[in-house]
Picture 1: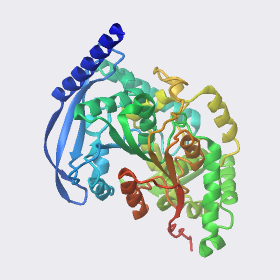
Picture 2: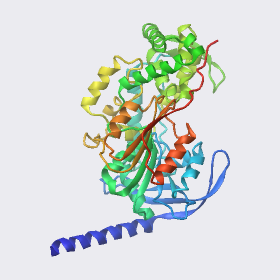
Picture 3: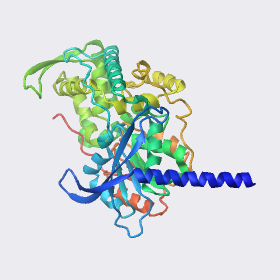
Picture 4: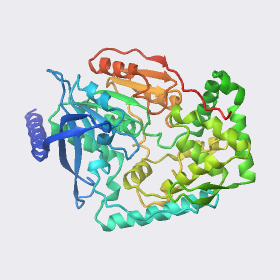
Amino acid sequence: MKHLKNSLVIMLLTCCMVGFSQNKKLHIEPYVFKSNTGEKINAELGKFPVPENRKDATSRNINLHFVRFKSTNPNPENPIVYLAGGPGGSGISTAKGNRFQLFMEMRKIADVIAFDQRGTGLSNQIPSCKVQAKFPLDVPGDAKNYISKMSEASKKCISFWKKKGVAIEGYNTVENANDLEALRIALGAPKINLWGISYGSHLAFDFIKRYENSVDKVVLAGLEGLNQTIKLPKYNQNFLKYLNTKIQLDKSAAIEYPDLLKLMEKVLDDLEKTPQHVEVINPSSRKKIKVGISKLDVQLVTSFFLTKNPENSIKLPYLFKKMSQGDFSEIAQMVVLLKTYAGRVQAMPLIMDAMSGVSKKRLKKIRRQSKHSLLGSTTNFPYPEISNKLDVTDLGNSFRKNPTSSVPALFFSGTLDGRTYIESAKKIVTGFRNSSHIIIDGAGHDMFMSTPKVKDLMLDFFRGNKIPSKSIEIKVPKFILSK
């Protein structure tokens, strides 16, 4: 008993020393925060050091940054930490955008922390790699060429970063979760509230699994479970089917697009047999350029640019109708953007997704389902194929096990979210015994601003009120017609 008591005393002292040490390293200064619309507010800019790779004692320290918006509540709750999506998104940049007012509203509850995760925004201390994969615009894209060139460029960048002293394998979700705990300790908070979206939910789930006692409440949208980095094509196909039901509810659109899936199938089958070439004006040079378009190019453009939110998806049937009539001019402009964007190599998103990985069992299911999906597995592209060619460590199946938890949780899903799917979300929600799931019928991936009801539900939840699971219907924008 005496030995046990002494051990507890030592543990307590160690804990306190760690907390003191972290607080001592925390640097905070006054900061005038300015939104993208010009609104200004007095805030605080904070930074604190963490090891770049906690498994490598020789790795450097990096500074992680955040902006703190002080609470307007005289008795504030535990801090609310915002976790951006991506991976690669900046919490500070997000706060400057159209969610600025939502950040301000959350101050009614507690201090709000716009956190830049490692490798993002102000927390990015990775030298820029100038290497890019180049894809000839006049050559229709094929998977082998895309993966080969992207892998080659990624390998060169990884080699460059390592030579510059970057502990590249430190950019994984486990280290990201450890950073969150370091942030909590640095702030001197007994617990933190988590608010995040997409990859931010992926990070939150790992943090809950590792540090459940450090979590007060969580509000998450666009759920991406720890085993859901690589999405199931079946769910993407279901999304297209549901989008078609929304088209049929629009009288004018229903006449022009009686069956979206058949229209898409015909266009993609024709492209598979005969890739297209079209001349368009390059928006940069204002000169005519020739663009080659393959079935894969159109699948990728659709997955990347046309399924994320309703604002994107309302143009999807119009573009396929134009292609069915032999007009590829508008889709060609999007293929140019695709090929330009695909060549860039960004460290944080590349390594985060590669290390989160996919199990062999799930990969088999994905390959099987992709044969019966109009868009194949392009929602995931270039993963997991590129991951297999990089010299980075997969975090393993134990990492990919989703948490079970009693932490109070409020989850949001959108029926027109073509990135993270309701079917996937429902599997995660079952692991949270004290949770509510709000389905917004008509909302896409970026659903926090889809309706003022989201803000009201968040405020009620953070105040400790019980929120029942329910569905909220919102109006879908009018589909674009070709006439």
